Image (cartoon, rainbow, N blue to C red):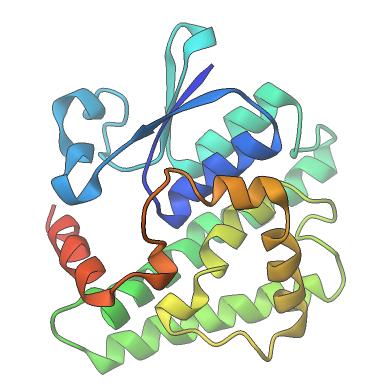
Length: 225
């Protein structure tokens, strides 16, 4: 049994989607980011970085894993699914997973900050991060012109990347003209396990439909810690 410490964010959805796709039993442990529960001492013993998601494997002497990419790799290896074991296949998945971890997530995250959350709108910063995120989307579109999924077969790289790209509009990024990326977004969104994982933890309001001002207030509090 896996304990999943999470909140309704793209990084959190990565792990809940994989848990659903791989049919791994898990218990949801919601973390209230607005109350800074992720900074409390008990949680820092699980994740010293004070971020979600994190998992605890109850079947492995309560082994804790933090960082969303590390959680994905651990669970994929534990289940034997969505991460090939052959050298080249595994490397291809890891390349695109690292592309998300080092590129799409950080750049789109900063686009969110300056476009949505910053109390002062700095146009240079907004343009910088929106433009770089869009450039990364174009890289994805080019790859998806030659492959159904990022690493050929559906994998943890797709789960990680989709969780961010599915919220492109929140960062003010246009994707309608990226036909291959749009095809991929829609195909993954249609997967029942993705729909279930995207709803973890259950909340009354989806971030895509939330009041930007209310989200901004919570985000501003988190960004100062």
